[in-house]
Length: 327
Image (cartoon, rainbow, N blue to C red; front, side, top):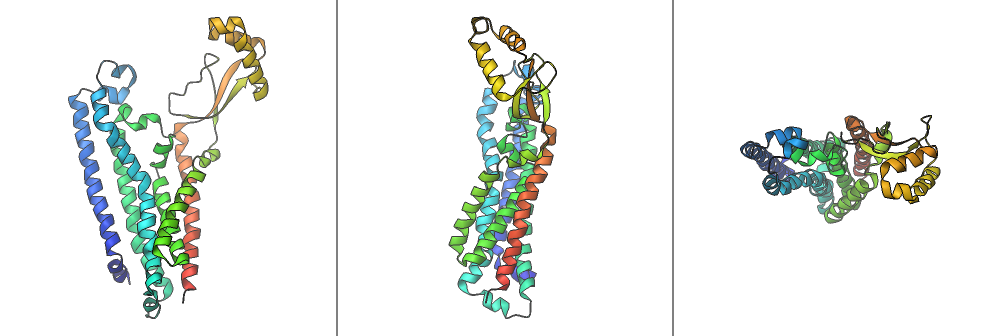
């Protein structure tokens, strides 16, 4: 049964193999070439430390050569799950149901359940492997770019978050499950491919950033009373003012006091010190921010994978149930 499934899906499997070999080889070569360019341009210290280490070197030539390639690599990992859902998951059963070849499979000695599971495993496992390997290679390459690469934006950046940890694999599983389920229900390959694309895109946009709510934020107080240090890649999810006792001031009161202090002639003409003094006279001592540390992104990724993986399991169970009812 496994061999028959391989033969029936050989086009998709060969395509996945080609993507893995070509994409993986290209990423390895690009990283090697980039590391050589960094060394020859004497940007090693700048890449590793950033800040003042980059002040005495010319970064423009490097960024002109590599920035677009970085974006292409990130886009590859973002779109790969939906491509697998559309071109691997959607036709998996829809094609057989559309052409009626499932009837022959149902009349063989192999049970329907084994037939379905064989096709699912043969199609899904290679797809997940391809995504996981290419994701790792992209991460390996972009990390080597250091402060000159897109990872300088932090792990909470929407694009960086979408290509990190277990999230791409979970998205692939979900996209595949959507395609397979819609294919069984619609019994038309083109309809399944179109619907899989639409459902996945809507789900990704609807759930984007929602997992951040499951991560417990920490409160950071501004050292100078006004500016909270966010240089470590943390994500701000809230802000406000504290009184002298360290208690949070209601937002509407903080806004009204801030507006009043900004309109005073002293604060308007002489800057932050006078503004802060005015705020403190009104009982507002320090600004604070609620932040999600970069070190806690793995928690968000686990929730992300649990949500999309959970939906995928339900869809795959629905696919099996719907297939068993086919005549």
